[in-house]
Picture 1 (cartoon, rainbow, N blue to C red):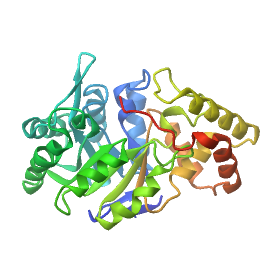
Picture 2 (picture 1 turned 90 degrees about the vertical axis):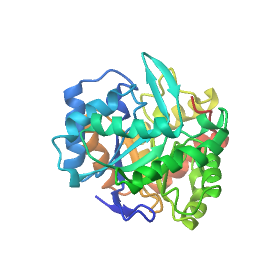
Picture 3 (picture 1 turned 180 degrees about the horizontal axis):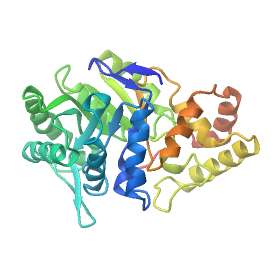
Picture 4 (picture 1 turned 120 degrees about the horizontal axis):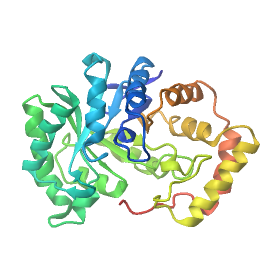
Length: 315
């Protein structure tokens, strides 16, 4: 396992991170016992950063993850969770107020059976950008509340997450240096979209560590293909299907190439992927132990063609 420095946090994180969204049943139903075993398998393999959110499964992911974490030594992992996005009874909710952010942190601690959080993130800030107060509320209210908790030792580091890279940049430009210690972005460093590279210089200049998520672009870069709810435009879905079929002809699963590509940039501290299957942990680590087929990367990107960097709105 390779480990990389996360900005100025002092954290050395594994190049592959464990995303616990699947433990909330976000993508499909799962066996809870196998999901917990997947967490154990990840930590046993040297994966030391685990990412979750109250939003995933409307608190279910944190609850299931907590069942695993209570049996894992605290020095074996870094825990990243979030504030701002929630839900109940199948209804999504958003609240980026200082009061709710602080309450949420303490609720997460209880669900996760831990006494501090390594990285607390403001989750998908673009949703606050659509509401009264806009992103300025993240600057003026949410982030200061989280730094209050940092001074109290309840959290160690503070970050922000979003699909839209421009929003991450805007917030960093409007806060004091060091306020944002890490960012997490998803679906923008993968075979069909590498837009994140355009922002790495900016993040590094501000001492911000970079985490990426969804190396398979939420199913686009898999042989199985996308779920019905995937927001990608149809032309992008179709070329990714062609790319997956081409890789299969070459006896090189597109999942393997996608994982290798997403973890190949040393300027990205860790790439987070989610699973509830222990065997998927081992398989992806085996992919990373092998050299990447650079020509196949180029072939796939040629197939994707003018759909490269075509994105979608966060929902």
